Length: 119
Image 1 (cartoon, helix red, strand yellow):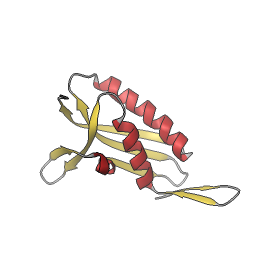
Image 2: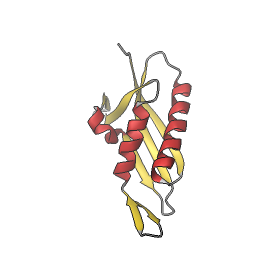
Image 3: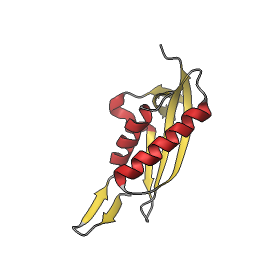
Image 4: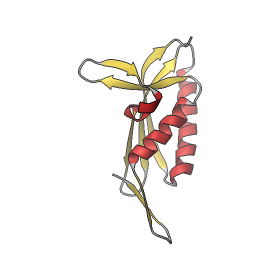
């Protein structure tokens, strides 16, 4: 569902794909995150997504009252604290997506799909 806000000049509609793209860009800037992951449900294989396809690792849902829920599938760097990385991701994404969209972020779910050594 698309997010809609009413202003004095008209209605603003935001597609979930736009929010996913923005949230993905914010997420890969966070320390300890190698990138977004795409899970092949048929094989169970996980592969790292390129920058241009970040949105495949993120699901966005917008409720009737314009509250956002984000699901991230990420690959983290080897040797970093997973709890520190996820706390950083949640705080950065929540703040920046709320500022960007004007809609509150209710839930951010993070699924760690793999660990990768950074060269």
